Amino acid sequence: MAKPVSVSDATFESEVLQAETPVLTDFWADWCMPCRMVAPLVEAAAKEYAGRLKVTKVNVDANSQTAAAYGIRSIPTLLLFKRGKVVSQIIGAVPLAALKSRIETVLAAED
Image (cartoon, rainbow, N blue to C red; front, side, top):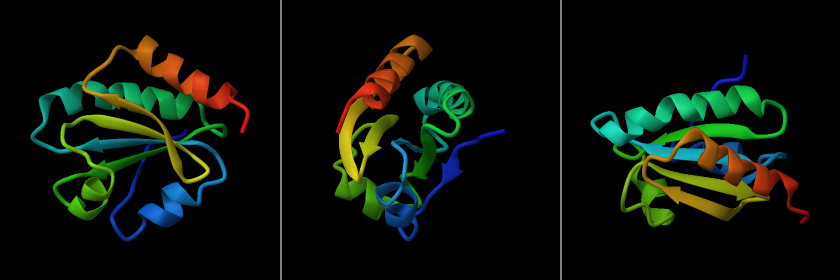
């Protein structure tokens, strides 16, 4: 069963930027209540889109270098990457339908 992969400053490039498939990255922190609300949706996306979408999580407290590089000022922030580039961004807690709609758009887009 597919689950989100925790990535760090050290592994971000190999896990996210060099991924073969599009990647959904959840920037979060333990103390963030909206992050806790989004976490089950991120896990559901990992299961539903297994094989077509890689799902990763970056704890901003432990990996401030990556968070700063992408200008993360508010969490949760979800970034969708395709071929190493950000193609979509969601800031704050959103319903599952909104998340799935954004993912479907990225997966359907031709390069």
